[in-house]
Length: 636
Image (tube, rainbow, N blue to C red):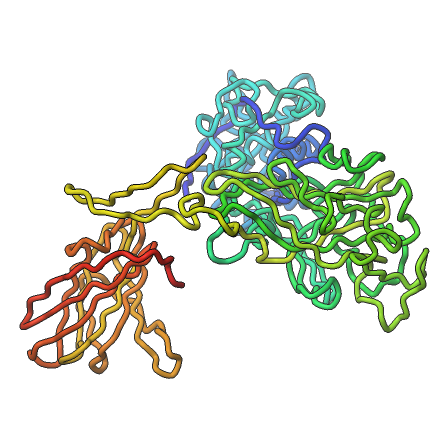
């Protein structure tokens, strides 16, 4: 961890509106600050403690971070009530019992009488970069600008603790939060701060950097529908990655969440309550915790006091409120994306067909794909209910409100009065390049009566549409067809419209098998640029498959406990770019039970996979015969 010091004599640059106009603020994260008031040894000369909490919180809302200030601690030390140099600052921060919070992820902020006293210059704050600890001259900060106060100082020094300095990630302009104090425009009011004003801006690069800080934690909800518990700690990235299926068909990046922190997160315990799926992501127009059953209210509601979103305006005639939006970019290997979801609401049943037409949408590259199966109709209260598209609706109301009440023994253990059956989303995407998705839900007509959408974990994946020609997607690239005279991989093909995807073969492991002769007793593997260890697998006859035995060091001999006739080496880093057709790519030293002739194979596992190398060995000499390529994908 870096522990460089940055003194504040004044922060800010260019831009980063992180949301569409009119949408709720970016959210999903929080950090906690522990203020510490320093006093003299006898408790006198207490320092001035100023947070400017509204200003600090508004500044960091650009990154979706809620700044939480704890009740102040005190620390009596005449010596540390004046900080004359960096050494004294470091001694105060690192010393035990100096008022610090016991939680190492809470930022400690000491307020002292003076920092670096000088008749000509004023130092308002000092902080570590990318480490815990800052000090403030509260009197100087509060006296600034005729008593208005230096409103961005706490936010600026917090930025240092989160890894930002005065010169990188876009700092330097007069309106950037992290520009040095003497060159930065300091806001005189809350209205001066972006997005209402132009000051105290953060760049996208700065926001990306602070997201890596251990002091920034997830503010979204983890909801257990079975245990009926809710805890904080989910980040927007956690939500997006929770949706993604295994197998690497989708790469997620640039995740953002807009809305209230209490409204969304991850859920578990959904089986039998929502439908067949147990876990996933929940987005609501109220509170995620309101999903808990039993259904004992026909008007469960949380008013978050937020605006709606223009994304959903085309699908309703009313005004949207309390929007929750999960947005991210993704790179698919296939040309179609899929996932599964259920929509639920307490607007059912009595407000179906009214102006309170709560709505949501899943926008893939700007086009809404959340439609009732077999139609182009958006999913909303008025479009799927007890009298419209009834085959897709599940009544869960003991009060009726239109249809007959559901008997108590037949109610699902969830609060919402109605919900849809499981809907499957399918949408065309552009393979191998960046695509974008917005998952959005909002109240319509007013802020009350919650609605929710549950999206099943692990169902967000891409597939290749039947009939798609080879080479049209990264999931089915064209493989090499010949070896050029100078080496490498040769391709011959007719180009496709758009991108044509090709894929050279790279070895990621080898199987070693005795066909006849003495068995293996030991081996030594090469040291590669991106490998100093490998995984050794032995064949387990009971399992009928390979099982991990141990990790072995490259360049060091490994002896088997007893001779084996089959083993696998796995974990060759693709960055080594090993050509499986290269006889010199992975020289392996082997010893055998005896010095009798051996016939064996060495089979490369590659991306994509090749056929075997056949090795014919006499006393010590090993030669390679390379067989032809097969169009086959890597086996997991």
